[in-house]
Image (tube, rainbow, N blue to C red):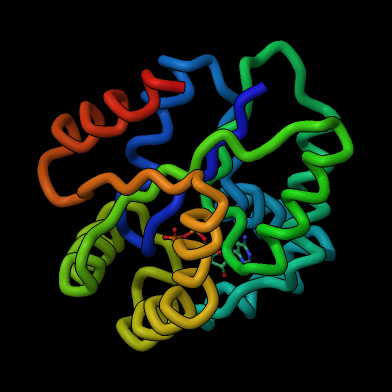
Length: 190
Ligand code: ADP
């Protein structure tokens, strides 16, 4: 099984690129953001807890997303692997993922990191807000906090995956097609 971590700041284009990646490599797309948004839409207890955190631009607790991911690993079959989108987002989550995979003697295949500068993050999210209507995209101070959270809690994962020899950086500036071709040329090697 392949386990790809799709990494990048908010607005880097992870969700946009994920569709063609899962299709080409027959992967299951697991987006913690999407899973959490469907819990909110369904009005579950978990969704209620997550809503306030997400709408303030904060992360939900590690145990919550770790539990969601582990459950999906167990219940999903018939694929060549997984594309983890938005997970891990903290060092603790990355360590938890490594432990989950150790149980079945597996490892993260690669961390595919789509990089864009902060200035472009703001621009892309402002644009997405007019299209998708996500509550956490609409308010500039929330976007600001998500970028801050990314730098403080998520960016250290770059070193984590570099140290593990798993880090593959993709330039996320360009058209959707250009970025997709860059991603494919890296993933074709695994
Ligand atoms: P984006 O990639 O645009 O930042 P996502 O859809 O991946 O947005 O996630 C939206 C929100 O869901 C995050 O800002 C965070 O509050 C929450 N979330 C998603 N994944 C995680 C995670 N792995 N750990 C903690 N919180 C998460």
